[in-house]
Amino acid sequence: MKNIDEIEAIRPLARVEPGGLGGDPSGPAARALLAEVTAHESASGSGPVTMRARRRFRPAWLAAAVALAAGIVAVPIVLRDGAPSSYAVNLDDGMVTIQIRDFDDAPALQRRLRELGVPALVDHVPTGMMCREPRGEHVQTIPRGLYSVPENIPGEPGRGWQMRINTKLFNPGETFVWTISGQYGGTTTYLMRGPVAPCEPVPAPTPKVLVYHSATGKNGSLAGFPVDGKTVGEVMSEIRKRDLKAVLVVIELNPSGGFAEPSDQDIPVGDDWIVWDAEERSKGVIRLRVTEERLDRNPVTGE
Amino acid sequence: MDDERPARFEAAYHRAYGLITAYAARRCGEPQDAADVVAETFAVAWRRVEELPEGDEATLWLYGVARKVLANHFRGDNRRRSRTAELDAELADLYGHCPDTEVELDAIGRAFRSLPGDDRELLSLLAWEGLEREEIAKVLGLSRNAVRIRLHRARRRLSRALAEAGVHVSTRSGLVPSKRAL
Image (cartoon, rainbow over all chains, first blue to last red):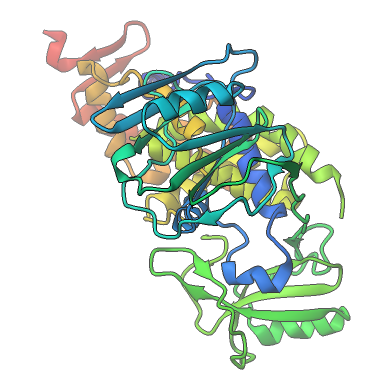
């Protein structure tokens, strides 16, 4: 009986009541995350050439950082169904804060931004469409603090988002080019110099679906043969036995965690190197991630 | 490639989303950490969709993934983050009230936090997620017997820690913090 009490004692410590649910599986957060997560693996580009991007699971923040560097911010947006069209723009000492809860009214938003001194061009395209590129010259060096990455609207979790633009940092002739696609699409932000062509909606390229899967999974070619921690020699011998092909990828550990796949893969790999992961894209061709040293934990799975 | 996998993932995702967000929120001090854990858990799950079990087992499997992600997260391993603004906001909402501000809960909280991580996880899966022993065994990849033994020990240690913190538990009147008792 005493045991039951101890368990009872810690129940009230739970931030979310015991047995209760945290997030809403049909809410905007759940939908955005699902889109984000499932977009990543299948949209990994077109094979080895783009592997310069290194990891097929590129984190969102990295994507954002890369995009920022290139003058682009792309974020997934999810809006509440049926919400009235609304946005709010405030100006405070040259800093414009835009809160958007619905994106239907792009022309009005553009007008309002221009009134406030933001040289903005706002377009809305249907889901699956984009404006034909290139529309103009991209500014490569964006002044620090010109605009913020979209963030939550304070006090309104899950409803649209807000971003800040510092109107004082625009150079003459620059335009803030903002494209919003679909209700569940995303927004793309460019900074351009000089004339910008009107948006001509064209179908957005469908990301080539490259399905990677674990070669050691139930349906994998190496089913029943866990590879992590085995030597290259051991794994290659099994691969030959099963009449498969293998590609060896030497991975490098990032100091901050995670790993990278350097593009120069001409290092000779010894039989005593360690395999951490086996995946296959087409049946029978196994991609093995290896390191020279045996590590404390698997750098691919983090376990 | 088999096309049923995205659908299978989505079904498991919908079933588990509320539970995994709760799981993360109960274990992370900050909503941002919880959002990271949730995002990374589902990212790992999608990456390993091949291994995703059918039906309710999928939720237990996801708890197992979340547990590992959580451990890695607090080891400073924040890679592959797929957080979204919406997720941050939703989790921040769950942090609106602080559960252990009352004196009793504060003492219990301290006692609980003094336990080894493995003990806390076992006890939490039982007390917070409301899992059965057999389910806990699946989440932790242990045998039922191992769970039984570990749980027994964890409870003993919790009981001792509670006593040291001056909290006495009794069946009838709930919690009686000794500081306030008389």
